[in-house]
Image (cartoon, rainbow, N blue to C red):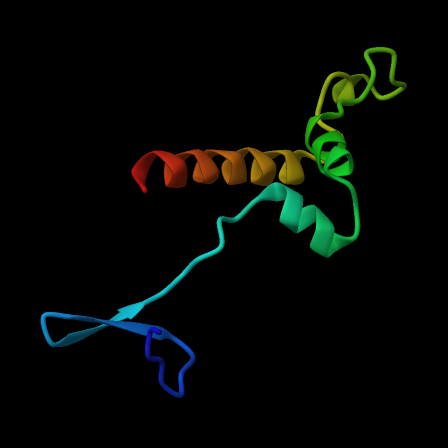
Length: 87
């Protein structure tokens, strides 16, 4: 059994030293969607849907409907990839 103390972190004894082991849950868009009470599909739609090419406002045609969310979604995917590669 691994000892732990009041802060809730497990500690492993290695060569008579105590090391704090912090376990992290991999951040996923699925978990984020679950916490937001929406589907993974809804997140994808918010991130990728664009105004149709026949939209009345010519300046918005082909533009993301939610550009800030599209950017945040892309950054989150990039961060997931870097965590998988680096760890």
